[in-house]
Length: 467
Image (cartoon, rainbow, N blue to C red; front, top):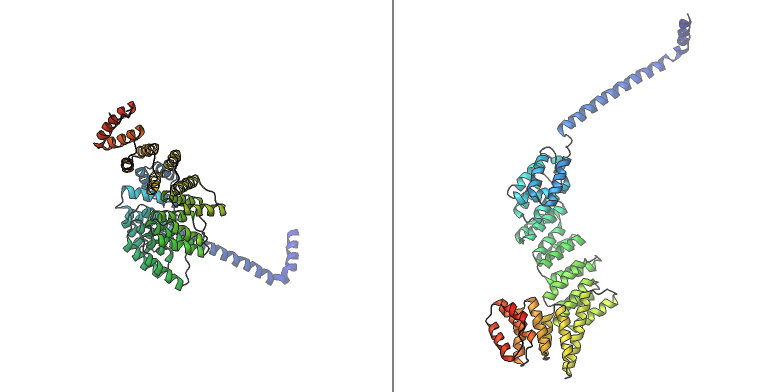
């Protein structure tokens, strides 16, 4: 009775709300059915995606460790063996791409491209991208395997549909430039014109020393308002440096400076190096300083050493003044060069005024010159000024010739001594005998006989050395 009474009361209370309650019940049931159906569809879709594009397996950690360890030891055969086991079921991690490529190129260069491409196709979802392509091309370009690089480049674009990037073009041009293939660099130029990747293009032409084509690319870039970046300038400068093109490098350095781009110290130093080799050190120095380009300490040392070799005290003084004005520290080599130049200036001034130069001054000047490896330059600077070299100076020079095995300079020194009828000391004879004996010249016998006739003491060490 109690239950029946409770139900009767509930019915009478809820009877006026039966429409609202029915709506809520059916709405809840419908919402539940829709959620169940959606969940079922999503599950089916995810299952289908997993079947079509399964999640790639991770490369075996043990094999990865083996590859890293064997790469450090330079064992390419072990690297290749471990990789071939692991790549069957998993894509190669990006950090292992380069060591694997190096191993393939070292052991099987003919089949390297095909094996790499097969692996990339198999795991295209992970490996078919510009990052992997750059790593592969970089390794191949550094190895100088241009044919393999070309094969890979073509396959990346045509088969794998990898869109070329700036970095990829950079690797391609660098590879061709490394073997001096100007025609291939020009071919890349045509392709890059279509994609407007001019920066790597100028680096390629510069690497083979084609200044006209670099200028043409710059003109096109100016028309299209494309500005070269620091990386592009560096590629260009490296290429021109490789070909010892002084004017072309200077033009790029000035352009960088004009645009406010920091010039790497190596570029300045190497530019001055090729300038000094071309006997244009003074011209290069003034060109840089006129443009207010800062010279690093290494550049100052290089210039001062060149001044010491050529006896250019005027330029050395200008360089020193600039260094002190800019508060740029001088390296040890710079101080040596300045000291040599300063002493030479005083010796030449004394000689010009007809003042007798003390023998000790000449000997000490030649001593510091030999210590700085400027023996030949110091000898020629004095002889060109008709400064008489005392016997002690000749001995010192000849002993240095023995240390450096410089028979040509020793012959010149001996000829000068005989011309001015300057007697040779025991040390000078010792040096000449050692050089001519080592070279197998019969002149050594004449020198030995001359020593005996002149009453010069023959040391035991020399006799042992001759024997």
